[in-house]
Image (cartoon, rainbow, N blue to C red):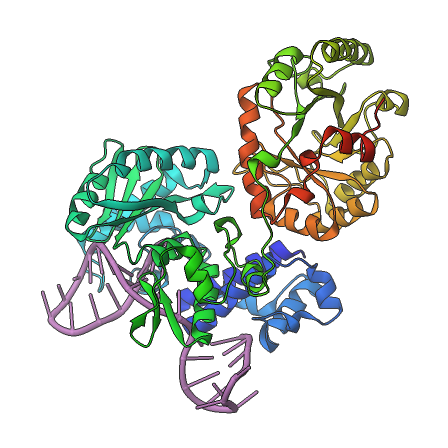
Length: 573
DNA sequence: GCCGTTTTCGGCCCGACTGTTTTCAGTCG
C-alpha cells in the first residue's frame, strides 16, 4: 500500500469520526496525519519497516499501530469496523456546501438519509424544514448545492482561474477608496489547479460598502452566495467562485498573508507567533493587546524572526523551518530561461513550420531552440520515419545557416515502448543532439512495470532526458503508478535530465517532485511541449511550478548558455 | 489522538457569515 492510499484511508477515518461526533481534536489528528503522510518525501514502506513512523510529528502510538497494520497487511480492522458502522454514502454528503459533519449526523439520525439521492428527495418533499437547526433557507441551499456539485464538481486549471482573476482585478481596481488590491489564496500560491479566487482589498472604511455592492453586481456574477461588510462570496458564470475581503490598510499585510494561506502554512505561522507569546490573525500580530505594526508581508515575516517566504512556497512543506535558518532559495525567474526544448513542428503533430518556430524564439530572445517531434510509432501524431528524420535534419542545417543568432538543436521525443526499449536504433538516436524519452501508449501498468520500463529508458546512454514522467493529465487522467521518488533517484544515478512539462494540463514533474529532484541534484528542464506558437506562452506555468518546487536558476537545464549545454550535455558537432 | 523551554494532563489557530435562533451552532476558509 502506498502513501496515497494510506493518506486516503486516514482522511476517510477522520471524516467518519467527524460524522459520528467524535472529539474534534481526535478527528483533526487523523486529517493531519493524512496530510503529513501524503506529503512525505520518504517511502512509507521504508518508514514502517525501519520502525521510524513515530519520528514523524503528529504520529503517536495509536496512529503508528494503525498505519503499520495498514502497510503490512493491506487492511485495517479499525477502519473496516468504522466503515461498517455507517452507510457508505454519508461521506459524499460532506462535499455539498453548507453541509458539515454535525448536520449530516442530524440528517442521518432523524431522517435516515444515507446518500445524496435520498437527501435531494427529502428536500423536495420538504422534510428538512422541521428539523432542528434547519429551515426553508438551508433546505433550498442544500438543493442548490447538489445541483452545483453535479454541474461543477471540479477544480479548475490554473490558466482558467488566472483569467477570471484578471477580470475581477480589472473591474475592481479603479474603484473609489481602494488603496491596495491583490489576488490571494491558491491562485497566488500558483497551485496547478484552483478551486476559487480570493481577492483582498484595503480601502477607506466609508467605501467598503460600495466596493462590496459593485463586486456582487458585476455583469458576470451568476449568484451571490454571501454578502457582508467585510466579506462577500459570488459565483461567476464560469462556475468559479470568488471571495472578496475588504480590510483597512493597516490590516492589509496580515490579511494578505492570511488569505494567501495555505491553511497548513497559517497554522504553523500561528504556532510560531505563539512561541513569541504573540497572537497572529488576519488583522494583526498582537503582543498583549498591542499590534506590532508591519507595512508589508516582508515586515510581518521579519517580526516573527523569519526570512521572507514567497507565496508559492507557503504549503507547509518545510518553508518555515528554512526561513528560520535563512535558507529560503532564490527562486527561478522568467528571464533566467535562455532557451527551449520539446517543441513540435508540422513534421509531426505541431501546426507551425520549423522556420516560424525559430523566428518566434529569436523574437522572444531565446539563445537556442530544440525541435523535438514525435517518433515513428506515434502514428496518431504523424511520428517521424527514418527518411523524414534525414529530411528534417537537412532543413535544420539549412535554417541554422540562415539564422546564426540562435542555436537550433536537433531533438526527438522518442517513444518508450512497453518493454522499455526505444523507437529507433542507436545509430539513428545518435544523429540527434537531444533525445527525450517519453511514454505515450500502453499506460495501464503496475508500479513495478512502470518502474522497469522507465528505468530501462534511463539506462540507455542515448537518452538525455525523460518527458512528462508520470503521464498525468490534470483533472482528467491519473498518473501511472510510478514511484516518482525512486525514479528520480535512478535518474540521479544515471545523470539524466527530467522534464518539467509546462503545459497547464500536465505540469509534470509536479512541484513536490521538483523539490525532491533538487535534493538529489537532478537537473530539471522546463519544456513548453508546444504544438503552436501560442503554446510557447505555457512556459510561465512551468516556471510557476518550478518556483513552487523550490527550484533556483542553478537547478534548471535551460537556464544554461549554449556553450555550457554543449560542453556538459549535448555534444557540439 | 498528539504533544511537552512551566505540562504526562489539558490544551490543541482564529474569525466571518448564515440561518436559525432570540444568543448561538455550524460551516467555511
